[in-house]
Image 1 (cartoon, rainbow, N blue to C red):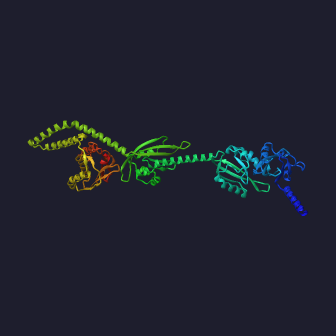
Image 2 (tube, rainbow, N blue to C red):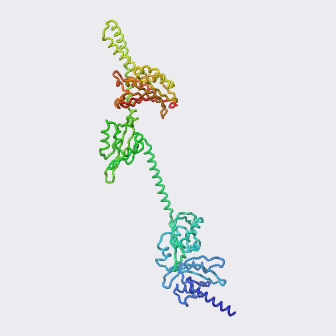
Length: 604
């Protein structure tokens, strides 16, 4: 019995020794909060003497603003409920305040309260609590290593919507359930590394809405260097992500606009280029240049002067002056060019807009060029049609007035020739026949459009009949006619006799262009816009652009005795068929006449 008492006494001394040496505060309180026992850690912290530390009210040492919460958490602790850790401020004798972390508490059978607390740190400018309360506007809170909230700042309440009394001592309610695993991993990482960790994640407000944040978990150390608390600061990234989303959207819009602009410049028929005057080179050339000039774009980049080389010789001086003469304003020029290696003539209009730098110096030009070849051809065609119309009106007006007296004069000259056998009568009769021929061509031009009897015809068959008719004449001049007809050619609404007349006229012109003989190529095809194309190509001497542009004018002809009315008649016939005639030629390389007629595809 004595031995058991001795062991019990030794055990009590050991427990007392542990209690007095422990760094944690150990308190025993009665139901009113009076201190019944306080270890030396509490005495040292409060600077109390041995007589002062008992039978004093515990609340005497608690900050007056924290007394109500401390009383509710310690004095009204139920035996059946677990204790919720919390923090409170305590006062020194010198009037300063610190913070206590109340770790554990329980109520005994006798109704006394046993408490374990730990001082966090004195309240100075290096304190985590001081920093959280005074030095940061970011929402922040302090937790223990179990994740329980010990302290929050005002910014936390404003952002998340929870008040201090609702979450102190509880696991952090701002962590969504699907992020708990990530949360515990980060806390463990901070505990082991003893270094702050920053990461982007998602947090939850009191109303249940989630939002993106940047979270920084920083360790809080004991004096021994052990991590026992963590400070968490969060930044609301909602505005950041919204701004980034808007920036990305704006960048996407800009990229789409750039792509749209690129698509436009890469695919429009207009030729766009940017020329640097200082570097004397192109900074950008649209692909449409390649199609127009039939020259590789890389070649244009390497040799900008190649554009001048493709200008018509007569227009070259104006073009050189246009591009080389400085200007402060927009200017525009129309000029002729050689579109490809075959020397096919074309027309281009170029508009130059200068670009100035910050000091007003013109250093770049934006050039926008358009192919106006077809426009010029239409203008020429309109002029020719106007002339045809004028000649037709003239023919209608003078045909009867001239033809009747001409018949009488011709008849009397024939009688006079029989009676006198004068040598000049043959010359007079010859010239009268020429006048009669011209009048007959005038009458053809004067025939109104409604007199033409149209019908669906196979152009290949019409042309085959023309070839049979013209072959004997061609053989007389050592000319071979080669035909290449498209078998799938659609029918054409036309007057076959007039179409024959046009093709016969074109073949005769081709024969006349080859006095030493040669080849005529007669072909048919269907164009991309479903028109029937008829081509008559010879191997004659060809003609310059100036003469080519005047073809079809009345009284303009390459022949010594030509009137130009034959080709003009061809223009008139094809006009009545709602078609077009176009001539291409190059000196020394022959001439090609191209007739386009609407097919049944167009009519349908």
